[in-house]
Amino acid sequence: MFLTSTDGTKIAYDVQGEGPLLLLLQGFDEPRQIWHEIGYVERLRQHFRVVTMDRRALVRAINQLSLRRIA
Image (cartoon, rainbow, N blue to C red; front, top):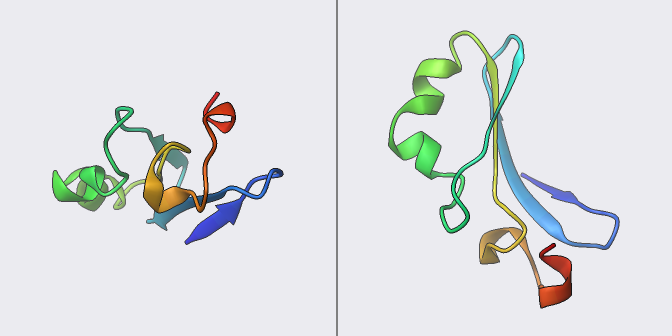
C-alpha cells in the first residue's frame, strides 16, 4: 500500500494483525520488508496491529525525490 504526503511523495507501508498499534522503523538504508524477512511481523501480528513503512529516501517509496525532501 502507499500513502501520499502533502508534497506528493508516495510512501510504501504494510499493516498486519489486530490489537494495539506497533510501528516498526528500520535503519536508514533497509526496506520495510526486512521486518518480514527476519520474522518480526509474523510473531508480533498475533498480538499487535503491526505497521512497517519505507523511509522517504528509498526508491520503493518515492516517485522522484529531490534531496531537499529527505529532511
